[in-house]
Image 1: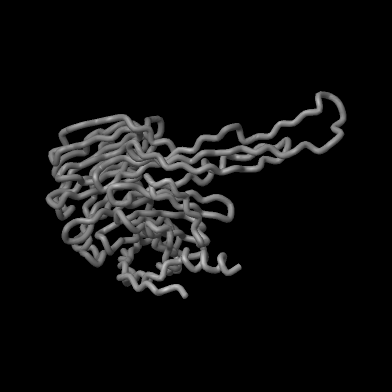
Image 2 (image 1 turned 30 degrees about the vertical axis):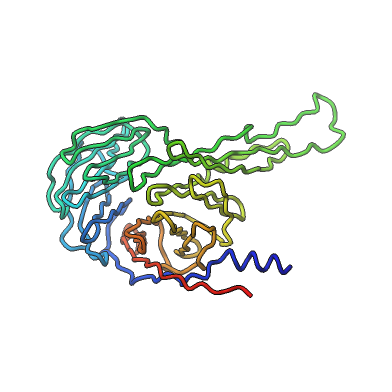
Length: 370
């Protein structure tokens, strides 16, 4: 019992709790769809879609918008914009998005904006046909986009420097250095359990079937995996749990971090390390994660928007509240000691707001264990 109590004590770090800044909210946005945020030297840039239209704007360091937003023209005037991504190299802003039109393939585009996100400089420019949301990052003045299964590198003039195929599988992430991390799940059998008595009465109940899935997080040559087993009752079929709730992967500096949620447990992975850490936390609802290369911020939405810092020694902060409400969370690392958390606040029928808070990490205050 004493050993168990000690293990539980060690799993929750004695580091000082993060400080959550004041909530900043936009005005009501009709038919808000999705959004993306990226740090910039003097604040942030934000892109969002609403009612099939695409917008972009500049935010100051406290997440307040600094000028009226820019409405970007679509490539196809009859299509609806969705799934925005955004990045900035400090002298310009890159926006990527999808356009959807009935009877046509879903297509990804990009455009270049001025540094203040007030002027369209170039584009829209075609990327590829895909249903997977684009990801964007600025690396050494260039732009990296991961769209579908393709990773592109572009100059600031949107000229192609490089392109390569990287299978996305269930999800992908772009690291600070522009590398692609992905996650996949492979089951050793179908998620059904057929049993038969070949026309004769069954003398004994049939046993359940066991299906084992291997979840693999990949970043270059580094692979971190864990196995999960699921019982399938005899003569029944169940949905693949990792298609119902896919694992997530997020950037962690030049590496990546992964999260796997199964019934009554949430596992955390620092990609490239062999350790799977079952969090001593109850993580429910939508999740998002990003790290600074050392510590990672994990947020979840149920019963309310909550966060916790996951440390590389596999200890955690205590959970801390971010907002009483909040959906579609996004986490962006700003510096070695700060993150931005952006989320959706539903206001009334058809209207929502984009809200955000800055989360500051605090200096260590470790205590001895007697």
